[in-house]
Every structure is written in C-alpha cells, then in structure tokens.
Image (cartoon, rainbow, N blue to C red; front, side, top):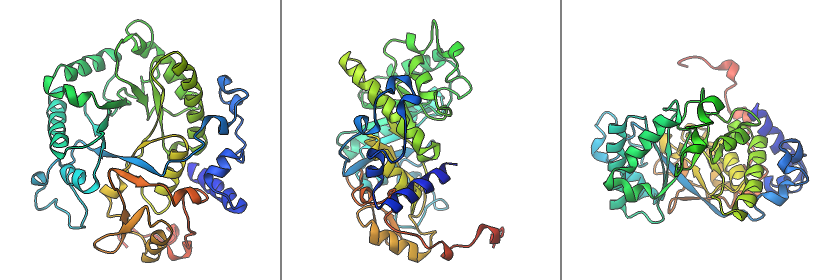
Length: 363
C-alpha cells in the first residue's frame, strides 16, 4: 500500500506543478492532525515541521554483523571488483563517513570485541564529529536483560569514550514484547531505569498509536521509512515536534524521529525517502544501498542517464559507467530532490522494463 501512497502523492504534486515540500506545507495532503492525536488538536503540519530544508543529510553507514571491517578480512572469493569500497575501513576513507549504525547480536563477548575493533578503526581514521547508533536487532526479551548487557558494555574502560558518541539504541527488544506494558512497564520497567540510553522503536512501529505507546513506556522516539508510510511518518514527526516543545521547556532531552532503511536504492525509492525524511527534520539517515549494490548498474542505461542528468549532485558516474551515490564528508546532497514532486526529478519510461507477467526464473 505504501507504493500506492507514494504514487498518488507524486501524481498530485506533478499535477499541481509543485514540490513535495510545497505540497506538505501548503496543506495539500489534507492531514487533520487533531484526529491523529489529541495533543495535536488545532495545529497544522506547517507549524510543526521544518520551514527550511537542509541542503545535505548525514549518511549513517550500517555495519552489519558479518560485514568486513578491513580489507585484510576479505578473501579472494569474496572480493568484489566494482570500483566501490567494500570494507568499513575503505568506506570510512572513501566516503568520509562520520555516522555509523552498528548491528549487535546480544552476545556480550562477541559484541564487545567487535565494538572495540570498530572503535579502533574510527580512531585511526580520525573521524570528525563522530556519532553512532546501535541496532539491537530485537535480541532482548525484557528490560533487565538489556540493562545487564548495556552495563557490561559501559564497564569497559576502552569503550568509554566510544560509547559517549552514542546517539540512540534502535529496537533492542523483540517486537512480541517491545510495546507490552506487562513486560516493559511498572516496577522494573523501562521508565524505571535511570540513566538508560536513549532508545527508539523501529519494527514495533506497526500501528497508528505505536509511537504514543512507546513514549508512554519510556522510549525516546521512532524511525521513519517510506515503506512504513509517508502519512504515518508525517504524523509521527508532528507528534515528536509538538512534544519536544513541551519537553524542552521542562529541560528534558528531546524525542527522536530517525531515518532507517538499509537497502533503499534508486532510481525512485531512495530519492523519495530522502525527500520525505529531510522534510521531517531527520538529519542523520541510514543509507547503505550504495554500499550493498553496484549503484544503479542493474537498471537500463537510459535510466542511469536520466538520473545523472536530473540529480548530478546526488549521483556520479562510477568507474564502470553506471551511476553511484555521491557521499562526501559523510553526507549526501538534497538540493535536486527538493525541487522535484516527490524527490524524483524525471519521468521513467516504464515501457523499457520487462513486465512482471513475462518474468521467467533463470531467464
């Protein structure tokens, strides 16, 4: 359904001859915030979301549990020859990364060693303004187990400085219990843990009231990704912005709306997601499609040429000729996306693609 949602939004913006940002702030989406959450009654989207869009966004690079940290870890059978960096060390150097998203599996010994290795790489790379998030991968079933895990991490002297750069922890609890008040609330619940790291939900953001329930339990926010719904993302971001006005007045730490979507790639989905996320105030967004795929090499050459012509700030021609995402100083450009109906500044001729009805396995 989110594909249909995005298609309809882009169609309206194209018909009106306006950008996504203009459509969002001009009230063209017809969102009635007060019907979504009572605290938003009487407020408009344009009063809550950023009125000026940034020109760039930080690309938060995901470090998967099996991703090689150095080139020396890549054996000859696994080594790629596409001209793109493959190891974390190479990506830090090539892209100038400053934010990482590090996946952990809940195994204290293994996670401690991997975090220590990553911390050493970051230190050697001399990363400026470094920050990182931990993806808990739903590995924990109750607050006490994650608290014990977290306190073990914090007890390591060699990780103390590294952990001071933590932005938040993403979805440490399994979706079966993450929003269960019987597990996460009451005595010994999440909110009763003083000094807990900032935590957001991701996989558990499945219902229209998920964010509100999460905040009531002691989480600090949620993620946005277009595949969860553009409208839901807008409403969640408005709720976060409204509550932050109140919490800042009270001196509390602000709530979070983050950007998470591992393998979102162009020529359409990536651009749409960047356009929407940046309009919601997301400043650091998980972006790894450029790392796990050979750019837009799988698409027809004519599509690649359209992308380069319309979004030359976002893509550049790779060594082998196909467009690949441009990441400089750990950031990607948003300039060309902001002028487009929903991030995409060109119209794809679908006739050049093979209809799904004609697909054949192995063909």
